[in-house]
Structure formats: C-alpha cells, structure tokens
Length: 155
Image 1 (cartoon, rainbow, N blue to C red):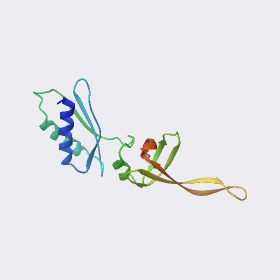
Image 2: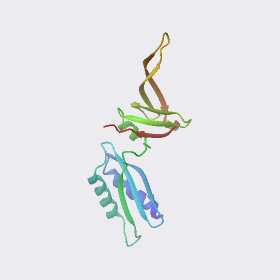
Image 3: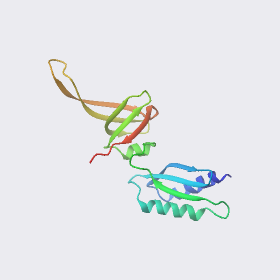
Image 4: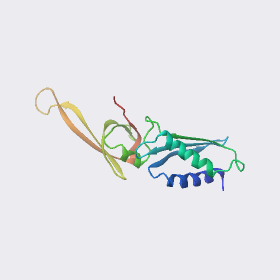
C-alpha cells in the first residue's frame, strides 16, 4: 500500500466521525507534505481543522513515514466543486462560467444531483414601445456544463 493510499484510507475513516464535514481536496507532495482541504454543511471552523488534524496525526506513524500535515477549510473565494457545496449555498449569489463560455451572476435557487437552477432579473427593451422593462430570467445548468462556480460575497 502506498503512503498516499494509506493516508486516504485513514482520512476517510476520520471523516466518518465528522459527518458535517466533507473532503474538497487532498494531496501529498514530494516531501510528504499532506494537504487536506475541507468544507462543511455549516462551514468549517478552526476547531474542526484542529480535530481532524489531531485525529489524522494520531493514526499515522512518523517512524514508518515522516510527513508534515496541513488541514484547512476551503476559502470563501474557492470554486465550488461538489454537489454538496452547491446544495449548501442555495439562496446565495453565484458567478457561474459554463463550458461554452457563457457567464451568469445569479441567485442559486435550487440544486439537485444533476443540475442547478439560477434566477436573476435583467433589463430588456420593451416588446412594444420605447424604453426597457425588468424581466425575470431563469436557467438550468447541468454540473457537467459548469466550468467554474464561485459564491459572490456582498456586504
């Protein structure tokens, strides 16, 4: 068993004890630096990172393989990668880039296992007469067509 597969197995077992957390990214570089990026259904706090780090460290043997360990939360500006992340961000505004280079900045109103639904308002020319009117827009985008999606933070 490779070191990476052993760490992955231990990490999977540790995360079973923290059902509200889920793995976003995991890597080990040439110097055996283990990097773990987590997200959570209710966010990730510092204590979550400490707990997962301690649990991982206690189940890996430094005498067997020397390593360094970094456990962090996904940053607020990190792109959404998992269906679970889209579901937890329903009601927030996303900036979505599609595979065919379209861009949408809209409110995420629904997310299931295959697609997301975005809604927004746009100003368009009136069908009759001069001027513009506000029109409600809605689009469904399947996950396979999403190139990148980021939560837009507004203050």
